[in-house]
Image (cartoon, rainbow, N blue to C red; front, side):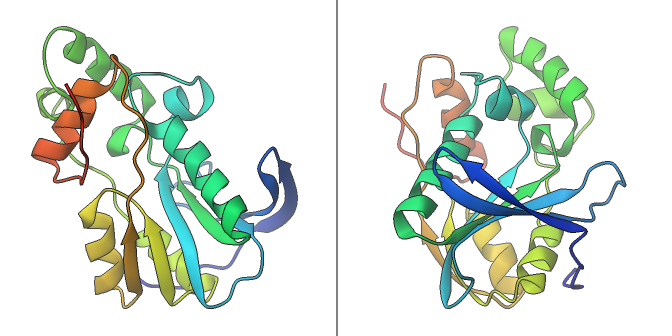
Length: 197
């Protein structure tokens, strides 16, 4: 962990939140490149979101999770600040892949929570890793980070890698479909979340 990766390609990406630069970096798998969405000048303390791919949430707007809403919120906050970076890691379904995530959905519909479902499928509760985010941040010469996350593990990983990190809460409004999922993240994964009844 910590090797600096060279970008593969960079392009202009206009969005409803404003103009970003999108930069592709090599991933673990040759057809799963990781991405950085960069707005504004990269200097000083940067507003950062490390976001793991969630096809169902990011693209299909699934209400089973808060992923798509968190991605939109990060883009909005960066636009308001005028600069920032989203690191988009291609580790779908907490690292178990899309097909296994859909299998986990079925187990959750039968009464398991997200942690129990992953374990029942033969995986650890959390398979995501943030080493590639560290490599991208080093490639972009980032040292001070305002990290938009509710997950203390991300903060710890970045601090261990030598970054100066300030955690910024990144919560969205719960809905009836994702309340139990969010409660599990808070109770079993130590995410800093407050979920009402």
